[in-house]
Image (cartoon, rainbow, N blue to C red; front, top):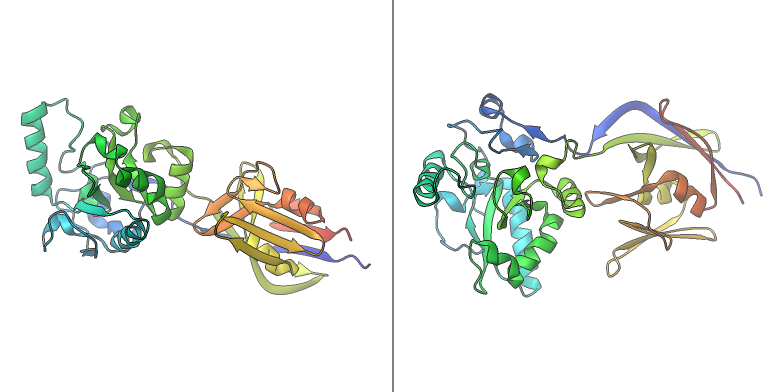
Length: 333
């Protein structure tokens, strides 16, 4: 059988960031740039917001509130609000009733909370942020409880709502912002009720690795869009690749489409499949054909290691030159 040669040539090394890196926005930056342009800003004791900052796109999510009504703390940044709605809806479908308690907070509102905490616990308290250090000012955070007796305290983690939230919120782009045993890093006590919207990609990375935001210097991978050439004929088909620690990863679904394979997904096992001739590949977040293998889940897209995947599919890597943006593979059959 005539060998087919598949050549992937970069149309240009113009990379598309899947999301921007973690940033700490100081008072001037926050005041001059709408915070909804990025969901990865760090707001903490070292990186306060401006006293007069207020998000421009605040809406009230259509969820169950502890205190219903048109009040400030029921508002959230728009995208975060939509994600919250989806999460609450899916929780209800799973028999879990979540209750939203406190989202956006103005400077004055947060200052009142902070002054009360000082009077009650003293200046060494680390459960309530100053008005400029609070994530609630961004509209990206929401305190959440449930209807089974959980309240805004650590015991919430033992309720069915708290357990569901911890296990599933990342799927909707949220994280438990102040994780357990991370007080020395975040500067705040463990708060199983406090969730923060960062987007699905970053939320997945933080959840999977058990990290707080302060522990990630770089949150996202750089996606490079490439053009695949088949049998020496350059087409306009695109394929997405990323590189991590010297390993090149490729979008499994796009790879299957480009080589003429059959791609599928099983929701029960959360595994993707790729059939190519007599070859069959099964892949999940840390699974590749029966063995542990690091894959990358970026948003809803699964990236698999190119070299390993080619071997499983009966393809032979002829050349890999990431500096020139060229990858050549050939069939063995």
